[in-house]
Image (tube, rainbow, N blue to C red; front, top):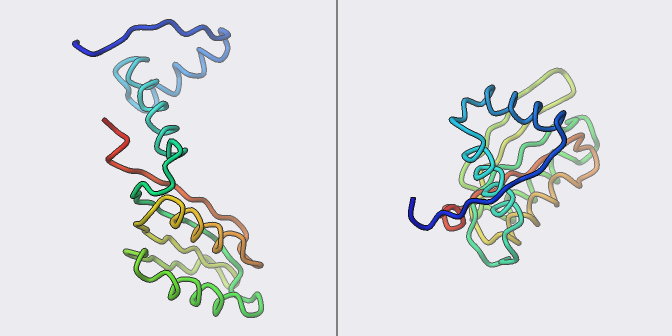
Length: 138
């Protein structure tokens, strides 16, 4: 394996046992591949300091649609950023709660800012941004 560096990792036995269970559950072939995936995930998530890097992402959020003005506010935010929203999914969870998933594309800083505007809106109960970029995965 040209271009590969081997290094050792030390960790507590209990943590290693939990890691090995995770590896088995996710069907990794070995610890090395699992560690590579964790490292790739953190590199992409951090944007490695490049706020201008193009990323793709999803923001998933749950909100109470009975919160006064929230539905209109969320629609306004999305219309203000329509160029960066590739797709959206809306699900009615119960009488009060909705779940939305937006698929986003754009500069890392813009995608993160859009997600923060949405998840920070009053009435949004929970939200999470997940980003990825083929550029950082080599």
